[in-house]
Image (cartoon, rainbow, N blue to C red; front, side, top):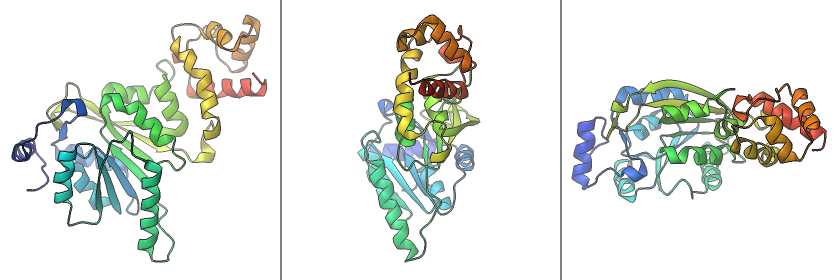
Amino acid sequence: MAIPHTALETKAILARLGLKPERRLGQNFLVDERTRDRVITAAGIRPDETILEIGPGLGALTEALARHARRVVAIEKDGRLVDFLTGEFAGTARVMIVNGDIRRVDLAKLVSEEERNAAREARGAKPRTDGWSVVASPPYYLVAFLVRKLLDLAYPPRHITLVVQKEVADRLAAGAGEMNLLALAAQLASRVAKHDRISRRAFWPQPDVDSTIVTLASHAPDKRPIPAAQEEEFFNLVRPLFQTRRKQLAGSLGRTLKLTPPQTIKLLTMAHIPPEARPQEISVDKWVRLFRILEAHRI
């Protein structure tokens, strides 16, 4: 058997393995080589870095990633696919297949082990400094969890490349007017950019909607507008405000912090936020400014 690159090859291999795509696992296999190449380009892979691939499927992207990176660690939940992938990549040390659920995998430990591997390969020389990156095509329900899990790591990935439903890409890259908690979390920790739109025909079985490639380039720890140590405090402030997103901030902020209307309006004005504004209308910069003002006033 060999890694499939077309819908016909994918169907044939699945039939030979006696497998059917699991919709509940979001199994839509990449069957278009041009799309594969566009994902590789967007990922901006460095030759000395490790790529963590989440959900490799039948390995169409894994194979290409291994040609560009020092090593690919592919995490696959479906044990049936793990057996296939392990056999196909048995002859290369550049690919490691891990059977696991990304929601439960200890990424900090996995990355640390890869760092030690790199040091051993360097044979006493300075280990690589290109870090690690992520490439994934997660199902809708997993995106928010995955983004937060990756960006909250003490040693986050240098770069994250996701193939997601267009509406999810729009949410991640949202600006003032469409701001949401997912976008706020992503943009505080990284530079988010949307890339090519991907036709649903690039996958088999075809999903119901088209996808978009979106990338998140992590900010250095000292460049984050909200330090990691203060993120929990920041989101404790903004989360309840987004839960009442249709209400004006002058009212919801005042109730949340138990402030009088004049106090609330003064603080919002200092942050250059109109009192009648709603949470989704506020940019990341203004949310950060408001947090800093509240911090300075010990509120």
